[in-house]
Amino acid sequence: MNPSNPIAEQYRTIRNNIQFAADGRTLRSLIVTSPAEGDGKSTAAINLAVSMAQRGEKVLLIDINIRNPMLHKIFNSQTSPGLSNVLANQLSLVEAIQLTEVEGLELLTSGLRQQNTTDLLDSKVMKELIELAESRYDRVVMDCPPVLTAPDTNVLANKCDGVVLVLSSGKSTHVEALEAKQALAFAGANIIGALLNKKKR
Image (tube, rainbow, N blue to C red):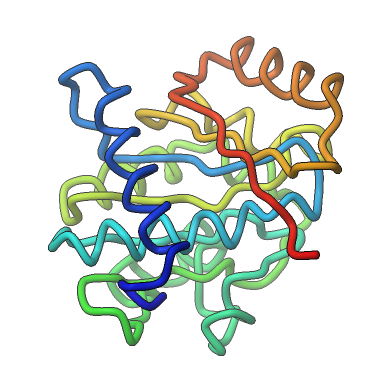
């Protein structure tokens, strides 16, 4: 992301607004999600993570969407080893992390798809992974599956400091947005804001 790009400036504003919404608390781990597929949450997660790294923070970006991962495609990397390998105790978090071209930004891809994805994300190992990441990084940004398509995000909602809900202009309906918000709130999420993503014409 070019720092002088207008989009980059917008995400710097979003980054700062997130901290304002924290009301003095440190938001070290953030979930970025959306109601449905195709709302632009992965792009939002990346741009948010990059903007944080450009401020001088050490940032870990994690692809939680094991069922339908995207970050490895955008960063032109392999899916495995990644998150699912760490959760299966096949290797450590440090061994699975990849460097990126953005200074201060590191990546944990999804790993290979697993049958018991929700159970893995709802495990003690996942909770410990988040805690370890929080101890090693200034920010942990998690690109999570859409709320209304799988239970994966909801099982993580209360394990993180905050949730950003990405809505797509002209695509996300009011009903979808409300259902996603209610599902997250029921799961114990600290919803710190919504991001309206405008699709290119």
